[in-house]
Amino acid sequence: MFNAEKTTNEIIDFIREYYKNNNLKGVVIGISGGKDSGVVAGLFSKALGSENVLGVTLPCMSKESDMIDAKRVADFYGFELINVDLTSSYNSFNEEIKKLGSFTKEELKNSDINIKPRMRMMSLYYLAALYSAVKGGTYIVAGTSNKSEKFVGYFTKGGDSVSDIQVIADLTVSEVIKVGEYLQVPKEVLYKVPDDGLSGLTDEEKLGVKYSDIEKYINNEELDENIKSKIERLHNNSKHKFEIPTYKKID
Image (cartoon, rainbow, N blue to C red; front, side, top):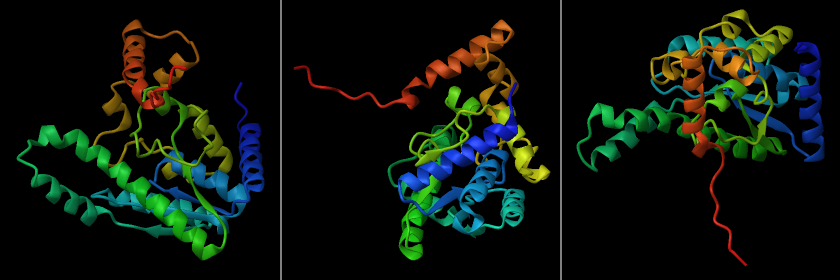
């Protein structure tokens, strides 16, 4: 039986110990307005103090409601929230791509979706280096992916797959929500339907499976064979995301 209080306190201890052992000061978190970043922000605020947490919104033709929800989280925990709008940078990049040739919307679709989280992660690392210099101590970037997402490869290589510390990557979606309830993450954020804020689709629409079914698969619970096969296919087709193949010399 999952114990949200115990897990929350263990994660907080994990963060504090890592920071102490590595002489770190603060954390930079991309605040999307969703449950995962809300829970991560809550955990770091409790572990480090809100004064050592920098939240960043990184809109790129994004929904206004996501910004409102991000502010809800920042206001509740009391950490600094700054905004870096990536829309003009994204548009400039697209103009350069047009010089390479004429491409259809369908051909550009996947590239356009994935460049956004990569731009966001680049921005978070820039700000981590900047705040390290300004604050006189090292800031690192926290990841916000959960176990269910990671299992089916629902992340972008070089984007949200990149981070310096992961604190919810071993928690399924329902476990993240339980930790969020314990941390009192604002309900509008914790229970909102998850989406990437980039494609116009919900996470489950993009994946073609429910998070609850992914969790059942992970926990070896009974599951419809067709759904099970789809989850296995998502996992297997994403194996290239999990580790980088590296040639090693043969002695």
